[in-house]
Length: 272
Image (cartoon, rainbow, N blue to C red):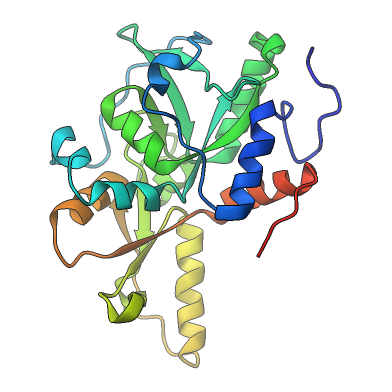
């Protein structure tokens, strides 16, 4: 039966697996991963036919799937990306709902914008109330890999697409995930390593970082501290194929706030 005692910080009820997931988040800050066989194990549902993806706003990675996932640097990058949350609508067993592509293939959908996932949850609860669905976080690394392999759709935030220059109202389906950074605010690498350029999922967070940098320089002019945009796919390609590239991925504040509020709403305590 569907839960009726839904906390204000959680919409759709908490799947049984989510309690363990949240516990892991508080301990390691690593987001849950789907197993290698996950695309075949996911429950196949068809909430609605999906429209064919529109043309991409930016180029897809030039490196082939083989080059990406067989690179010796991929495992470390996979773990790094998994510290960024995406969100999906899942049943009470933690299985993401699947949708039917125009070609008839099943696709899981992972949202960069938690608010978009919440809206999708409302529709799922109307159509499948018996599944006791909820919104759960999944690491960006896993979501990206499934998307590149064609088993999932990684949907960027509409607001961030528009911040990257997309036309107002452009569909996010099929678009690359934009990331934002400022070349002048690179951070020192660990143990004297190469500098790391922060890449933010949220442009607002990137702007806040630039503002902080100006404050730390005694209010010097922000002229020249321009925010640039780089797609997730291009960032992955550069990290795997170009020596001397160093990026530090920064999750959107809103996404982390949602996870934090969910943890508190369910009675979990964060550990330092």
